[in-house]
Amino acid sequence: MTRYGENWTREELILAFSMYSETPFGKIHMGNPKVLELADLLGRTPGSVSMKLSNFARLDPALQARGIAGLTRGAKGEKEIWDEFRERPEALAFESQTLLAQKLRKPVEDVAQIRTDDLPREGVEREALIRVRVNQSFFRRRILSAYEFRCCVTGLKVRELLVASHIVPWSQDSANRLNTRNGLCLNPLHDRAFDRHLMYVDADLRVRFAPRLDVPKREENAALLWLLSFEGKTLLLPRHFSPDPDLLGRHARFLQS
Image 1 (cartoon, rainbow, N blue to C red):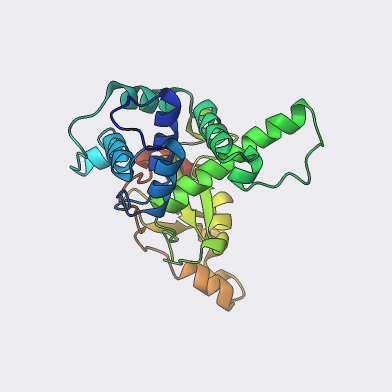
Image 2 (cartoon, rainbow, N blue to C red):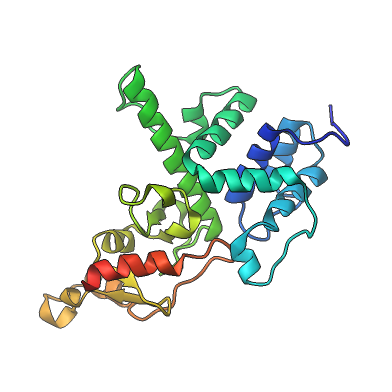
């Protein structure tokens, strides 16, 4: 039964925030199948859900920086959830996936589509690893959707060949593990080069490679030539959640040091 005029609960706001985080720019509308699915789960109208997502957009600093304000008015609860995610992102991300799993009546690992066959069958270690993998899956979906499922270096649009790459690694900066501005959508080869500090992004958001990859100094081959053919190319930036220049600078300094 559709509910009209009822205040949104904290749990509903968390689910709406999670959907906002995973929805490509320009796809927040009543015809989006994901919006329709969430509306059905919550017993809300598609219009109510799409408006709530637009309310979250007004709080997005990446959109504000581009002069996009979203809806000018919203509820206090939206800002509370936004601030809570900023303060404890891993806890809230896992809570959002757990709430969704409960609504769908499925295990959270199935909803997050993570592997569990290599985990202990039960116990604290299993639960801890599931939490980490659920959050990593959440990060991947946020990054790929922000970049509209397109590699930001090559433009490749095959989802199965895309990687959500951390700018500053997961293990090195817990505060930015789930920060979408700490991510790039890359193909596996450029992801590997970026992860191994053989590639970086300069202050002008152009792709640069380590001098030791210079082709004349190596045996030339087609794969390496293709990798390096993107030298100097400007990143294909998302329309929201663009990469943080400070985090890119931290990554670049590692290679240049």
